[in-house]
Image (tube, rainbow, N blue to C red):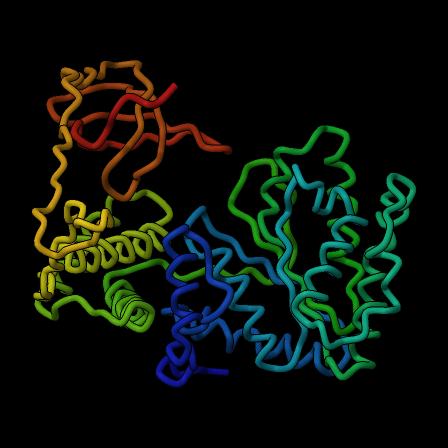
Length: 403
């Protein structure tokens, strides 16, 4: 099923556009309008048509695996699959594998509860009374042990119940499976057993979608693998145009036509230097630059002329002893010191081995340690959750990190 961004309906709601801009600035896929922003991903819907047809016919289908590095559109792809499922009438849900919240394949009972809660919020008109006991209480370890083998059967029971209410199928997306690497040693075998059961004990009317980055040590994920397309210059221009339209609808303002190409060229130049995460970096930089131009215009706009209020004072006592307000008293002015007299602090010098924070450019917010300094360039070593990466930035882009 192909779609036309111009008729997708995203730009019809200003409130939805505002929410989407806020989510994109934070590096998250928006809850609405995901199809409008899926530049270059139109063919993915066609590749899923066969599996959706099998699902609607009540047969079993293989899982789908969305792979990619951080910031390369993996979570966006999961939500796109969900929106495509919704366009065909299926129920869908995205659950994030979270070790701290104890939600994931290592806690199958809690995972099933998270699926139910998200479905209940998304589809409040459906009858959830048969599943009320899962909302009311949790039996702890005995129930977790029971669900290690029963999770596929519970999903089948849930899909059958939804089908009886007119929903043809269920799409369950489980994101960030790479958090398997953070599990305790005794939890990893449980994760693998549940993953094996969900993968090979395929359930009618249920499509399971896994989302994971490429992580060494992660169990192999079986299924149809999908990738977001790599960001090239043509896709970057089309995406920037859609972001401009989205921002314009949200805030009723557009940048000057002659300045927007320079904004896109600058963003593309910055993103080309990023080793991974180009999609997320490009979107965040474009949204941030549009916001800065808009704010600069608002804060520097001339004020409209208006009549100055007449100063009001207190007239001395009249012969009768009363005081009256008059409009000819001089205004009272206050003198507020602009400085406190403290001497400005000298900027701290950074050296090799210092822990610094990137404060400008597409890598803003990252913290790393200086490996070397050559002229005005700084070579940083940044530790991520999975590995260490080395990047080179300008000396003016870093400052000592806060302890």
